[in-house]
Length: 125
Image 1: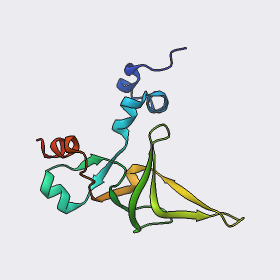
Image 2: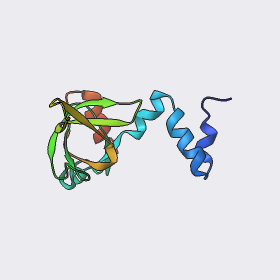
Image 3: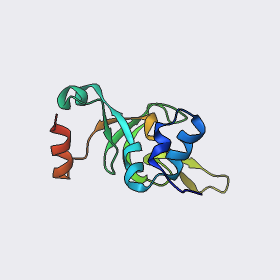
């Protein structure tokens, strides 16, 4: 059986869409980790969304930690999840566990512009 095919993307069947996203290689999964950006950043860069990176400040829009703001501590490409500082669950034994969030439930409020290539890509029209 074929592990991955770019032809699955062209199918309208939900089964094949899920298969495409699950079995995609990491260079394609990188494109799935995008999030909307705040209105002031949208005006500044003329873009609606941007790729999420470690160090970006985000606001959580859905779930238990709704309206919580924090920095991105880790991005998991394989599982398409983001870990935000302060969004932690306390387990029954008292230990804390970071909550894995999907990037579609976040809004980027401040971009980490340490990387000059990212800065150029954002300003590119």
